[in-house]
Length: 79
Image (cartoon, rainbow, N blue to C red; front, side, top):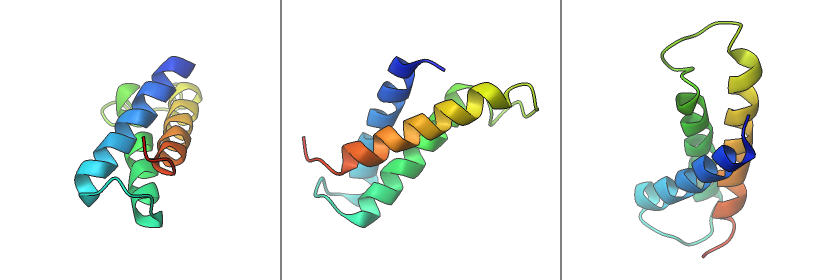
């Protein structure tokens, strides 16, 4: 897992949540969307959506979780 990738994907998830919800205001709903978007981007970046298997789990899970956390935290701040 690369920390810089987790931050980039998480911040991208935050931007996606702004587009989906149509607002940049802090809300629980937007935080949920940002967290889910960040986690989905993290999983997609590692190829987990295309190739599933036990060998990829040690890389996929931490990156998806970290990206989701960064997206969720970024959605709590309006920058």
